Length: 83
Image (cartoon, rainbow, N blue to C red):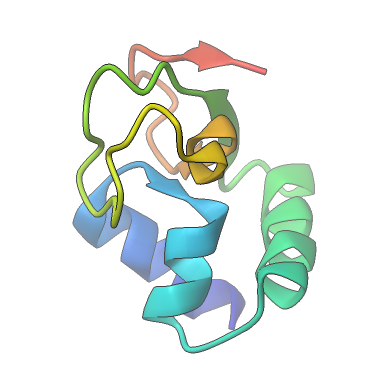
């Protein structure tokens, strides 16, 4: 699952936790745990995303959608603020 998450983020760019779970047919809890492992290994970064822009791979793009409060990326120079 770790490699699948990393591959998905590399292919699609920044994604919300919920969208990663949907794309991998998994639960948010399972994906959150895997993302934390990848974060500790320095493979992904948790970003805070102002939802004024729709991130690639985002199923919502809605400012009211709380899934955008936690966005992950493999790009350490994505231009978003790290949280």
